[in-house]
Length: 366
Image 1 (cartoon, rainbow, N blue to C red):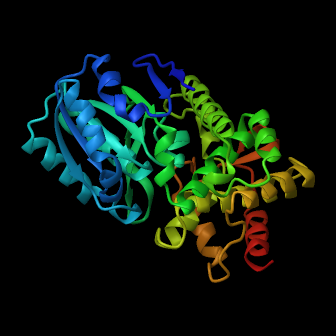
Image 2: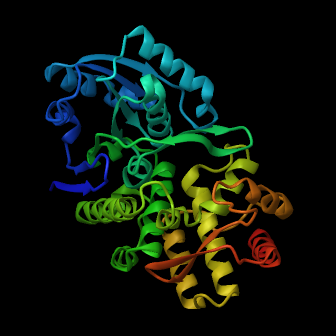
């Protein structure tokens, strides 16, 4: 079953194509876009081993000249050194303004390839071929690109929309279980902030912590609803002037947890899960939503096999200090995205530090 979602933007609208087996038709999809002949495919060693030859073959069959560049996997390599190496590959292969960078991989590869394409020759074409659930439903859509600074996640970046996002659910067969669960954190996020029906459908599933428990119809529903939610929000607010900030639900505390644990203890979705539990508890303390909704959210997070507690050795005051480095800080005030019901959230900078400290302390000891 195939579906196509359009991200409507003033400057450059583009399509998200979701179809099993579509990776083998990447060349056809890109040929329709009338892009230049030169392509630089960026991936990591594991993904390239699984899908690199298939991607290159379909591109060459469509008449593209393809070079590739491999980056080691993981957040520790999401830095300016890696970007420099992509630039070197672009120079060696003489990429032009009509050329295209293709990101074949998860969110880290997508973010870095996007940033490199945004800044090489002041911006060249960019195609996302996400291979992780997290990238499919979140990172690959919306044009946010970037790398980490030692003091914080994604502090260096640019908005640069892709020309196409091609999602092939079949590639999830090789996704490690931990990465699948991390992606489910972002899916649950969409249910809480935007789509109560998606949330309700996921509640009907007894377990979605492994791919074998998820029926093909449910996965298609998850991908379509999540991508549509992201497309809806991005279409309304491309550069995060207001509404788009709701997509950071769970990320405020989540990013702090990632940063303070050196990006080694938790992968992104796990940290977001902890952040969502914290945001739900803060909202409950402030009387914004009830205990029942908070429990529904937390149960769904547990069904996905995701963490709901802070590590006992993580200093709560260090988390509170780290929140000041968050990109959403405005006039020195930390902005939180807090739920008011399943399917709706509010953005607020009126969260007392004592409330945050109380919630985080409880999450680390209970």
